[in-house]
Image (cartoon, helix red, strand yellow):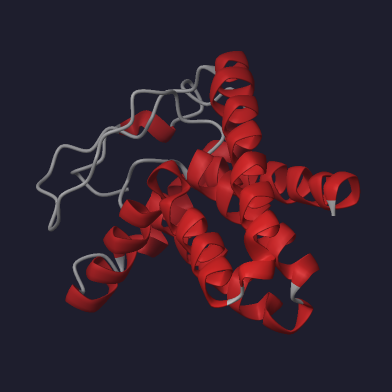
Length: 187
């Protein structure tokens, strides 16, 4: 772990034990080899910003509805599902774990909103994989696009040092599960 990041990923702080703490530290070290690259910084900071409040996914739904008015119902269901997912994750799961976020003591290359909630799971990752699961059910040919965007948004969170890698993984799993359940319930 770099000097700019305090030992927030240590096993003492991790509610998941030393193995997960080591995974988080290893993943952070891997990202350190990419951080500082101007293109990677721009991609991941932008993805993180567009992931805030699921803006990216609401825009995708609205854009698809604008191109095909018959998809308006899909856009509304996507946004409504993301609202339910957000409440479940931010007001439910995060309150159970109360995990601290990584402590970053450096200068960020781009502006970034600092969240007020706890770290586990990543709401960005959860919303992204929820949206990808829903959108892929409606348009399986574009599944690689939806999951690629979801992975980029999810990865942006440990990249910008707002989440631990295990927060990203947990959020992705939860979001995918919520998305699949939503697909089964509301189509």
